[in-house]
View 1 (cartoon, rainbow, N blue to C red):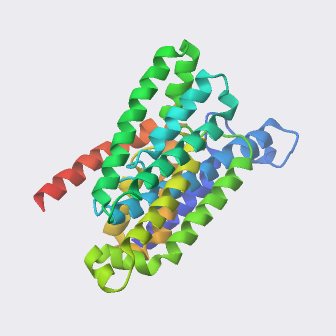
View 2: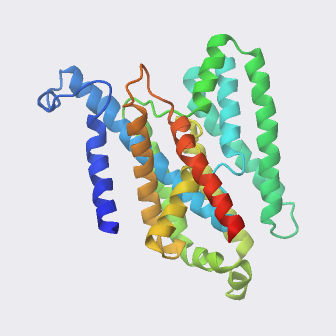
View 3: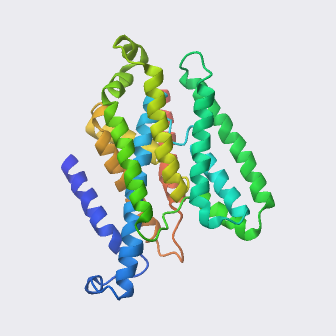
Length: 314
């Protein structure tokens, strides 16, 4: 079963760049002067790589958030990082700096992280629920500020803001891919470095304390690393929901192993899931691609309800 799923995933990644609204004859892909060559290497291939890396970051972020907050419903957007990125993108668009919107989005995400951990430093002891409440409060504040941006923006600016909030994998070239690859490597390196601590945290905070783990420090480091990685990802794609919720739960069900042993599979299949979602989004025969965030929400919302029902019945 696992080998079949892996084979399907590898085939999916291999064929994904060849499908889209424009047919790409293989004979033209090696002609550097042809339009097909430019479409494949400048748009299709970078888009698939973008989807894979962002999906991996979001899925792995979901695992960490669910572990730290001990809540199976937590996602990489729980602390309001995506909301901060969205608000600052809207500010960039309204101010006429649309070309710098990824930079503004990153600044918004990082400012949120600094606020969160600045407030957390005021706690006398580690309290994940308080940190979660701060994130929710920031999300509500950002949502209110975003509505103000909609009111003062023009029709075209409102459209640009709305497109960002729905998520997009539109990309040209490999410059952003390099940044995301380095970000993914950073996130994986931090999680592997704290692999032992993560294993203990999955058991309980009390058990980790007894084993001599500084739970507060470990959780803050993991949350900071995930927040930075998600901030980078969101700055390029906008918020893409439910990936961090769906993938960790599915992988734990399939592999039936402790989550600390599924770090690489969760990253890999998170990427595969977003590649698959994007493949559907741009091959529905519509005049334009369906925003990727809309499609993942369609897939994720029913799964979220299922988790709630399962949690209540257990």
